[in-house]
Length: 79
Image (cartoon, rainbow, N blue to C red; front, side):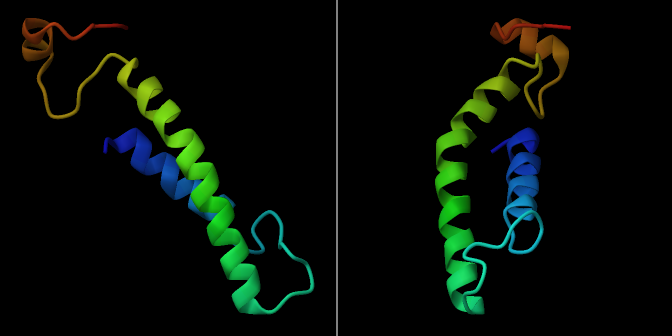
C-alpha cells in the first residue's frame, strides 16, 4: 500500500463514519448504524481502491526509490 491509498482510505473512513455526512438508517440503534456504515465503507473501498492505486502509480514516483533508480528500472518520470 502506498501513501496516497492510505490517505484516501483514512479520508473515506472519516467521511463515511456515522453522523459526519449522514446517518443511515436515521432512527436505528447504534449497532445497526455502525454496521450499515461499515458495510458501505467496505463496498466503496473495495470498488475504488484499485482505481486510486492506479492513479497514484501514474503520479510519476515510486515510494522509497530515488529518481535515478526509478529511471534505471524503467519507471516513467512524469512531471
